[in-house]
Image (tube, rainbow over all chains, first blue to last red; front, side, top):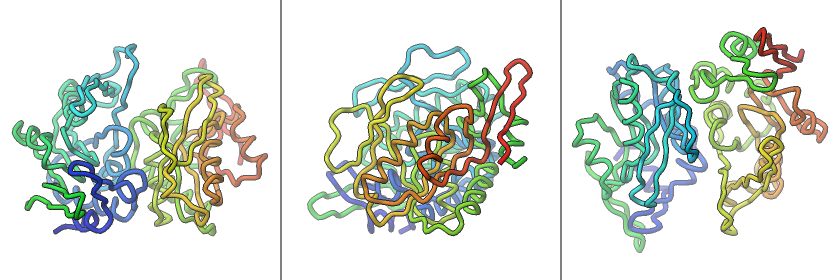
Length: 193
Length: 193
């Protein structure tokens, strides 16, 4: 069991079979020591890749992505969510349908920050159905850049996002993969990795 | 001239008398070395204060606030912007009118993360009219906590936010205070501090 799994067992709250509350240390309130350790762990897991930029989506993943970028000594770029229809031509845009919320989210990155020379490590805090992640991959593709890898703090292994991304051949590293949760007992089962 | 002012002169783009574009190193794309240095600088400026938590507002200020929290070795808490009217009773809520956009923004923090025992350092990337900052101060007050200080990367000295906060007696430190900008020449004048 690694340090992220241990922390989830200690402080995570199982609210339902699909809802894990990690707001106190990983989401709304961040334990900076834990985040720093996550940064170092991803640096180790993606050590030999020629990463030029770390990309995330605002806002929950920003601190973790920053901690990773800090380790790689590369810039952190974050995509913005947009509801506006008028998006200038100088942006990469991905429209991603949310499986959970049945709506469309628009993910935007300014073209000046991403090019075909970029080797991108995508980092986010959570992976469930992977809609946000699909949008970020699409944006790197639009720029002609290379997705070197994807680092996720907590993957919900009982939802399809991770499987899709692995099937597509991406190097996806999740520090904790939750296989199942029981709200009655509070028990959390992680996937053996 | 300090390192933030120097960087703004080098890479900032004056788009109008009021609009400074620092998106390439401080906003959408973050220079991690610069952010780390900002974290250390705020640690030095607020060194002797008993800070228990760093508070910011999503999403542009999160990385800077994280870098500060990392130096203080305290948790980073971020307030969320909300448009929903149905906010549960377990949250502190501040409604802040935007002088610029003529609308109302709702800033929300879960009550479980802030109490009367907290000594809070508020950190944000920009200060102009200070609406967001007023909302964050209100939230710390609602919790019965103490605002120990406020750290801002770039203050627009020609807008009123900073003056209001200083008049109210808060210890506000801005790493760069832009006094005026000229879009024709690109010249930026900083306030002597």
